[in-house]
Length: 98
Image 1 (spheres, helix red, strand yellow):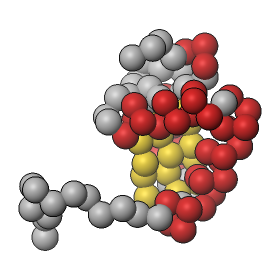
Image 2 (cartoon, helix red, strand yellow; image 1 turned 135 degrees about the vertical axis):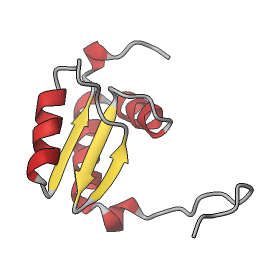
Image 3 (cartoon, one colour; image 1 turned 90 degrees about the vertical axis):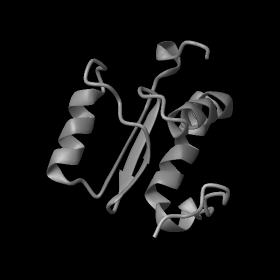
Image 4 (cartoon, helix red, strand yellow; image 1 turned 60 degrees about the vertical axis):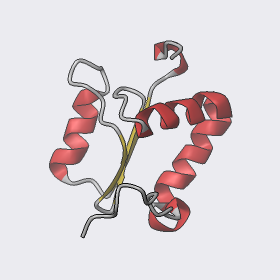
């Protein structure tokens, strides 16, 4: 069943559904800064590759990194072997302002 186009997507509690991802994101915010991490997540959630991608227990969040990005090999391996948890974010030096 699909939702009607005029109905917003239902909010999901990611801390409940992806707790390891939530903790990892919190750790990245502490290490790289809230603005950087939130910006990467926002861009990835809009479909922009190369900023943020996470998987946990069969759930995926963000947009995969392109095959030209250095993170791609690790991301591909995590997907291929079916990792329980993996998360990837662009380093501050790799981000160009939107």
